[in-house]
Image: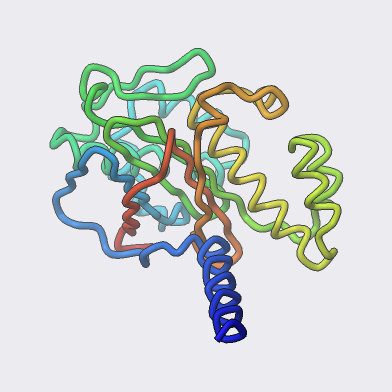
Amino acid sequence: MAERRSVLMAQQGRTVQKHQRTGHLPPWRLAPTRCSIAYGQIDLWRFRLDLPDNTLPELTRLLSADEYRRFSRQLDPTNAKRLMVARARMRQILGSYLQRPPEELAFAYGKKGKPGLGDSGRDKLAFNLAHSGVWGVLAVTAGMPVGVDVEKFDTQLEPLTLARQFLPAEQVDVLRQTPACRQRRVFFRAWTATEARLKMTGEGLTSVLEPSAQMQNSTSRPFTVGRGYLGAIAAAGQIGELRRWKLSEG
């Protein structure tokens, strides 16, 4: 009996580890026509940024004059287009929660530049936007700060070199003890979680070595966006119900 119990415990342990690695999240589902969110819920939205050029006029008209000027200054036209698409999608999604026209939303900015809703919905929603490569992700919550990060998996980077620069010493030690074949993925998991926490608090990279109480008390969960992309979501306290939505093109 004791032997069987040990086997069952080992199997349960492997299951828990699997859920921690994969995030044990629901699949990406097509977005509803009308959006609502309750306190404690987190909605993740996935959308593509590499849209056909003929879709741009409809999206860019949703941007403020300042947003359009700022993104138009990008030297890389592909990057400029993707920034505009990400911002327009963010406006559309937030507008669907607030039941307001996307182009009418106003944003306020914290000391470190983290955007929040102005008078059009400051007390109703918290959100955070991330984008990398061809994917954009928006996190939306009611009543609590949230941060999200997404990164394209780069097979050329040197994980230990970057970890020494940007991650706490204990995470560097974990990475050093990880087999070389897994170091990049472990680094990206740690880095996206750290970035999501920083974006949740609106703090800079210096907070990694001297984290605030808010950052220390936050939790994060990994998720996959698409093939070759890794992401993480962070929130104050425990992460409760998490829903994942995708737009039709994603």
